[in-house]
Length: 156
Image (tube, rainbow, N blue to C red; front, side, top):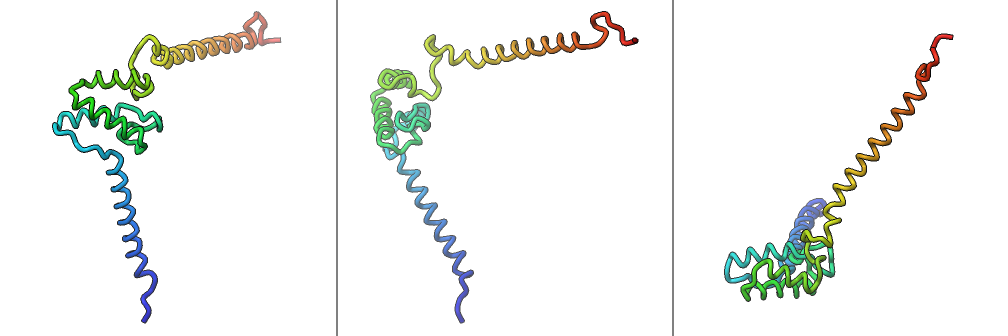
């Protein structure tokens, strides 16, 4: 008797899922191939910094999540600066001096970029003023169009 294809399908599906899982796990582990730092506190700082700094090539990914070689070089540079004893602010300043404010996912509040921080509030206030003026103008139009508002009577 021939075994049906349905018996083999779940086994093949399980094997394919297992293979995909192993492939995904190896790719995820390969993103940050730098060896762990000797001190757990340094490792935690490294983790935080690499998640705060943007990959300059990918631009929408953190250094920790990017798999391009530039991100690997920057992760290695962060690691070396941590081992050299620099503080988190010194490392951020070093990266900003080299790559500009764009490398930070959360840019600092400065006078150069203050308009970025103020723009949402200003736009909201401007929208409320425009809406208020439109509503006021419509109310005047409705009052002007009502019969009897200019002295005319409803009775003939």
